[in-house]
Image 1 (cartoon, rainbow, N blue to C red):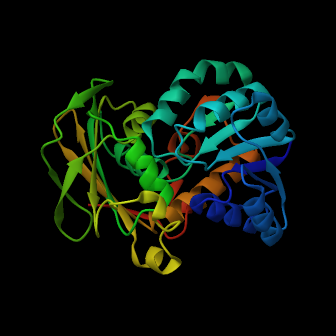
Image 2 (cartoon, rainbow, N blue to C red):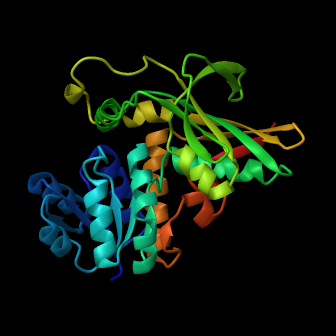
Length: 327
């Protein structure tokens, strides 16, 4: 029981996560539905692979034999998270994923008690914006006496992967949510708010991010709002299935991500910080592989956990050249 399995290992993010896990010396098993692509990647990395779908519980349980940590990279996660979280709880396996979809986090909330009873950890968003923004929020909240409100924005630079675009399209929500007095509520989505990511203030629009759940769980701050500023051509149009797997290495190197936060204390004072990091896809793969390695090494708590709460608010800064600066 000392192996990490990456399910969806031949997808855009899964492949990068597998490469980082292999480079770190993590005992690794690749998994997914397509034997042809899995066998090719298995040969390239020199690791074991297993083939199974998610419509047969017995097949999933057999495929998970001998696994201690499962990293789910198979989006859209509305199709994979439920089956794999349930299987992880049944088989006493710690679950992580790279979801940017709210449903994964709501599932983790739903399964929290069962996971605790089984001694299993559920960590949706082991990489990606949840690890970035969670670390930034934890860092800044620690500077504020009696924090009452968080407004946090992510600058998304460069193109989207095919999987991200399809997931985003399938998870379009009618309502834009924010957290008020600890509760998720619908808010108006017709306005913008300016955030400075280090090069002057730009307009950001309110969006429903899973950080509305994870930041609240990690910090206890009752009011949380999430925003996004998208550079480049915006959301891709047309046949999303025809998109390339994802941005090239050159594109990722040319497009770094930033995040900006404002934390308001009970006295009305606003405290600000900015995070700067590598491209989001690069960060997600590296952070998910590192989080999985650490869980495999014994860093875990049963139930629904977030990266910043489990590993500390400095977690993002251990990934590539990520920095947080106070302003």
